[in-house]
Image (cartoon, rainbow over all chains, first blue to last red; front, side):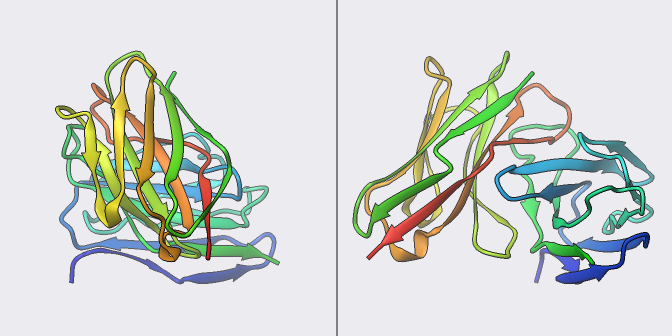
Length: 116
Length: 115
């Protein structure tokens, strides 16, 4: 059953702690993305990766870090430097790095992070 | 710079009525345009997309959208709303000549369907 999985679905963190969100895909997609969603603000791009061992900052990368050691995995770490980390985090992937017409993003189910 | 504007953060219709969700974009080159739907506490599901060719695009669940270059619009419609259509809808644009798949999203429109 192909798709994108994110774990955990709900995550609680104390202030000052780092936390890592998992994203795995078995679609054989080259590109992967992390978005943050806040009520009334749509989705904002945190980081994206077009190929293994390479990634770029998105619009709101401060306080976040990523790695891309394997094609199927793109974990996101929310560090203690992120001022307001409580949000819904969505991972996505797409087939190619060319940005052509077939390069459509597909999304995982999301992780809701709450800082206590 | 590209941007997407969704007119109306909340839209309410009666079951069986026409659904119209508005999306306008700005882009200096031909864009690729997308509509996604999100049910509560879930990820986004692709409804439909426009890349090239026919400007009227049909998607899943009876939705369709028309790309109008002169109006820089990509409004989403469905002839008859169903209770199960209640969700949040996002319009997104990608630069047509970009070599990445990066998307710019609108702020979303919540669709309420009344019985």
